[in-house]
Amino acid sequence: MVKPYLLSLLPLGFISLQVSGKPLNVLFIFTDDHAYQAISAYGSNRNKTPNIDRLAEEGMLFNRAFVTNSICAPSRAVILTGKHSHLNGQLTNGQEFDGSQPTFPKLLQNHGYETAIFGKWHLKSKPTGFDFWQVLLGQGPYYNPPMKTAKGVKKITGYTTDIITDITLDWLKKKRDPEKPFFLMSQHKAPHRNWQPSPKYLSKYDNKDIPEPKTLRDSYKNRLGPASTQSMTIDRHLSAHDLKLTPPHNLNKIQKAAWDAAYGPKNQLFKKANLQGDELLKWKYQRYVKDYLRCVDSVDENIGRLLDYLEESGLAENTVVIYSSDQGWYLGEHGWYDKRWMYEESFRTPLIVRWPGVTPPASQNSQLVQNLDYAQTFLDICGASSPQDMQGASLVPILKGKKPKDWRKSLYYHYYEYPGAHDVRRHYGVRTDRYKLIHFYNIGGWELYDLEKDPYELNSLYGKPGHEKLTTDLKKELASLRRQYQVPEDTRPVTRTKNTPKPKN
Ligand code: CA
Image (cartoon, rainbow, N blue to C red):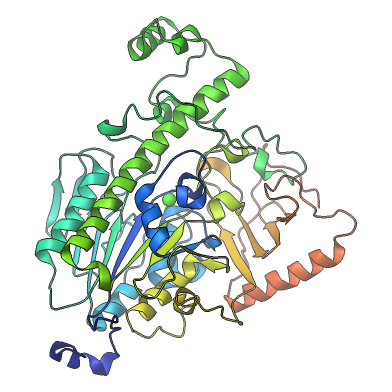
């Protein structure tokens, strides 16, 4: 039954009703840099995330969810607009988001929804399309964050992941309009660099070694070259700021004293206070990943708080809960931290959707989906239509357990931020079910991977005999995607430095 207050909204479209007859709400929980490798529902061998797993047990987990441009602000802009970076204008982190353009929150407001965003925004311009917002300034700190509203900036004391959840719960309990359905975005800074845990998790993992990924000691052979000229290795680029401790390597007197204060002379680690080579890499990996996982522990705990409240309040039955991150992340794979590449770990991102009565419980989906699809999916869930110029596709049929026959067979990716942090060269490419072709157009070379035979992407087949037809087909597919998405040719000059690898093909 449509409630009387909804009748006035009907000319704008029908708000979706749950089986119970109540309008559907959406809670979008979003993190920054959360690797699917650090979620137990995705098979993590490093940690457990019981609350994210709860969502997966009751909903649908996408094991082939990708981004279009693996970096923070551009990913957020793609989600808001449903358009690739070259159309929404947010190519890199350095730009300011044009908040005057159409976005899904604005369309939902017009559709009768109350919209709110709390936590990390990271788009420089003021949030638009939200009835309520309270956001971190830029990246925001892990502790005592200043937070901005339309009225100004206020510092809040505590741990940021807990605070963002507190604000989200406070709005749900006291501030929202109970007569309207809501679209609520609860967005964390965690587990973004430099991975500062909550005090309650500081000693978790102290007595265990976190498994290393198979490619931690990647030599970057058999590839074009950009993989070897980045600056994001755990071995060489992770700083004392990242590690929150000077690495135990060639310590001077003062550093040795700090090491002593941190671990004490009786600690086994202290005895190895002058680590070299692989021993030093192992130490840095453990130090880095443990702090990262501790930040994830707070995220998971706080997701549990939100899920519990939805149950207690009776909202759970008519609230779709979605968990995702702005992109994937390297937990030591290829020797790296950070993101940016079209290689799987940063190209992919977690996506789990719990839609009571609709998503088959504990279901997994392997269709090629992208953050480009989120805006249209959100609009579709809420019963609003999508503008023609949005470039993704609604995931609603998939969420209902269907297998659309005309679903996309390939994905387009494009990374722009070079010159920029971590020295990852600009590239675009295509990924199909089995293959990936990457064009490092900034350098003028290509890589080709067979993901079935080479899942870790260690051997580029580009230019090797026997792959001519495959290469031609993939180049055609790539050109077709670039036409479909209206990607302009990049006219910026090729940038070369002394570290720029020489083109091989
Ligand atoms: Ca990010």
